[in-house]
Structures are given as structure tokens and as C-alpha cells.
Amino acid sequence: MCKRRAIQAIGGRLAAAPLTDQICPMSAGLLEDASFNQSPNFGDVDLFNADRPLVDAARRAGLDLADLSTCGKDYGAAETLDLGRVANENPPKLRIMDGRGNRIDLVEFHPAYHAMMAKSIGHGIHASAHDGSDKPAPVSTRAVRLYLATQAESGHMCPVTMTHACIGALRSEPALLAKWLPKIQTRTYDPRPLPWWEKNGVTLGMGMTERQGGTDVRANITQATAHGDPTGDHVEITGHKWFMSAPMCDAFLVLAQAEGGLTCYLMPRYRPDGSQNSIRFQRLKDKLGNKSNASSEVEFHAAYAERVGPEGAGVRTIIEMVNLTRLDCAIASAGQMRIALSQALNHIRHRSVFQRRLVDQPSMRATVADLALELEAQIALVFRLCRASERAASDAAEAAYVRLLTPAVKFLVCKTTPQVVYESLECLGGNGYTEDLPLARYFRESPLNAIWEGSGNVMALDVLRAAARHPDQAMATVSGLAKTASAAFNVAPLAETLATVLRSGEAERRARFLCEGFAKIAALAALVDAKSEFAALYGDTRLSGAKLAQFGTADLGSAEQALMDRALTT
Image 1: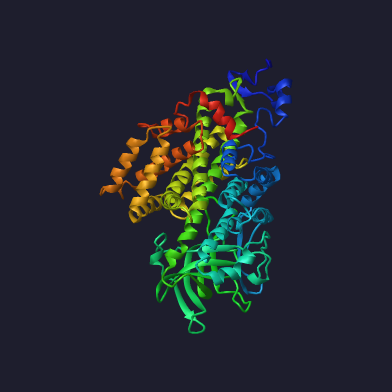
Image 2: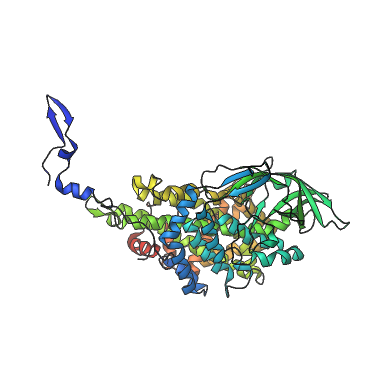
């Protein structure tokens, strides 16, 4: 033990001793080691096999575990995780003009962003659910890859998700889809600013909302005017979009007012003659997070576009796309929670405080195990929704599940994400709050999916709309979920309260209560379906009586170690 004093009394006052006199030889050697009592960097991890709840979900769906392990190693590689850091530290830039004054409307990205895009398109996350390459469960297989990819970097998932979702809308215009599909389904990322038919692969974006309407797209004022022969082979669109996501894409689904009402259109970056379309980007949004991805404000000046779906049926046309993007929001948010919790577990297993590792300290174990329990339920729920999506076309009960639960699952999972990420950040103490480690970036990213494709109140109201349009199917869905969930915990009182509120005049005011209640019963039912050993524990800690709000307040008993071990397998 060093006996020299760092502070010496001189003339009745305290003065600092010289630096060389403050540090004893033993402590000097320790201070030269920057990693002293610091957790190791998180990287070169198989993100798939380290995640037992995910592996179990994939096994239940009959997926190719070896292939998904390869994907998990790719996204968990230290080099890949660092690409995510670099892409966010070097956000995109908008170049409106070139040096000669020519309008170019070009968004420039750092090579790290392009590397992430090439990786995710190479894994088929942008299109594989539609091309039959992932049998027998294409939605679930793609969902695992999306869940893994977003852990490395979330921002580039925006154009990847939109390309996947736009295929759903384009199905309402088969001839147009047939023209574009071969370029969409390639596994080649081609960022060159060229007409789409000259490229090796394309991505699709969307522009729906306008400054005066936001979520209320029926208030859009952008106008579409028919041109060409009497059948109207194309329109020219004039107006604006307040949010045009992923402006580097090769075409965009947009909503505009036609003579017959609000209509969906596909607007390419280049006109059929090869000239640049009249899409004028005004600026890129300066966002809280999602820094690697570009979001823009844009004006259209008689921009070329082709109709998608019937005129006047714009909202109906994009519903399939919206359902797909909402499912992706839930999948990606679960992935964000997972990577944050993994970082926390990696830290507490190596960091010692008060002569004990953090992972051995009761209050820390209680907190992290509670987070792990939440992830057990979220993953089971998300992949139950994926399974329903795969079967909805041929199974009326699964179709009813998708209608009612898609907005509810998005609500629960996406709104839980900021709290889980924050608690994970706090596990690292002051280090978690610094920009040198990734938790600060994860935290800034965490609220986005709860806002994108409809905020919390919109999701809750969509649950009410789904229940009102198909009341018998909705109540049958809730009754079935309650019956399944009751094998682990008696949810009958909650289910009866939800049914009473739903039928009352208070339903809209209590919309969030209904939405979260349905989602949590569905989460418990998903755990029961999965034969999870933690189903009863989830019911008891999430659904019984008045529960305290913070993670770590629940009594998990002997389940703590098992939950933490499953959350990040070493």
C-alpha cells in the first residue's frame, strides 16, 4: 500500500504535491494500463448464437440456424460494429448544385454507410421475403437478419426496410412491379446516380407526409396531373413532402391528389428519356439520432410519376406497405434493445466495484435480469407476429391476429425500447453517457421507431379501428390469446376489463390502455406458445395488480441467472 500523501500541509494551507510524488510505483503501473478494470470492447461476437431467445424463436420456426449464425457473426464482427460508428460520425451531405451551377440534388454518404448497405442487401434483407429464397418461413428468416443487422447500425435499415415494404404496395400494379422487380431483387448494392434501368440493383423510398397534414395524409395538397395518351400513362406531380425518407433511392412511392382523390404513385429519379426528374431537395433533416441516414424536405416541379393502384385509393394501396414497415419497426426496436442489453451484460461481467464484479451485486442482477425478461417476451411476441404474417393469406384467424396486433405490437415494443436502452446505458455509469462508447448513439436512435409509421396514439387508434371494422374477429383473437395466456397466469380480469372498455364510450380516451393491454396479453400468450420457463414470471411481474414502473423493481427470484445467461451467451 502506498503511504505517501498526495496532499501535503504547507504553512497551514493544503497544497497539491508534485505529480510524481502523488502516485506510488504500484499504482503508476496500473494507470499505464488503460484497460484496468474496464470491460473489453464488445465485438467479434456471433450475435445470433449469443442470443438464446432468438435461437429458440428461429428453431421453433424451422429456420436454417447455421445460415443465421453466419449472419450473426458478420454483423457481430468488430469491423462491422465499427462501420456503424463511423457511418454515424460522418452523416450524409446534400449537394444541390455542382460547381458549374447545374442542379444535381445528390446526397453523398461516407464509405462506411455504403459498406453497411452492401452488406444488408447482400443478405437479402431488402427483398428476400418476397422472392421465395427463404423457405419455409421467409418473413421470419428475414426478420432474424433484420434484427441482427440493426444491432450493427440502425440508420441504413431505413432504405432497406422501405424497399422491402414498397414491393407490397407495388403488387396492386402488377405491370409496374414486373418492370421493377428484377432490379429490386438482386443482391447487388449499386449507389451510382444513374437511371434505374442502367443499374445493377435499386432501392425504393417513400414520401407521404406534408407540412400541413403530417399523419393526416388525406390533407395532402400535392397535385397529380395526367399526361400522355387518353389512358393516362403517367402523371406530373407538383407540390412538396415534409419528410422524404432516404432521398438517395432510385424511386419513391408518393401520395398526391388526382382528379379522383388521393392516389399513390411511383416517382423515379430519372424520366424515361434519361433526364433527371424534377425532384428538388431543399435540405436534409437535422435529427436527434439516425445520423447515418438521410431524411429530406423536397419539392416536386411537374415530376414524372406512374400510378400505383386505383385512382383515389391511395391510402388503401399503401396499407400493405405500412403493415410491413410497422412490423419492421418492432423487429428493429427489439434488435436495438438486444444490442444495448448485450453491451450492459458485457460490461457488468467484467467490471468490479467494491471488491465484487457488478454482475454479482444483487441490485445490478435484479435490474439486468428484469431487462432480459422483457426481451424474452418481446422476441417471442415479434416472431409470433412474423408467423401470423406468413400464414395470414390462407388462415383467417392469423389474418385477424395481424390486423389487431400489428399496431399493438409496434406500440409496446417500440415504446419499451428507450427505457431498456437507457437502463442498459446506466449500467455502464458515466462511460455509458460518453460518445466514445455506442450506448449514447443507441439511446438517440431508440425513440425513432415509435414515431416512424405512426406514433403511439396513432397505433392505439388503429387498434380501435381494427376492432371496430371486424369486431367478431377481434374479440375472438383476444379471447384466444387470453385462453392461451391463462395457462401461465390468470389474465381473465384484465381481458374482461379490456372488453368492457372497448365497448364503452371511453374507448378512444383509453386507447393506450387497450393497446398495451392487448399487446401484453399477446406477449404472455407468445411465451406460453414458446413453452418458455419464464411465462408465469412475465405474467406475475407485468400483469398482476399495480406494478412499479422501473426495471429492477420486480422480484425475479432464482430466475435472474438464467435470464442473464440467455440474454448474452458466452
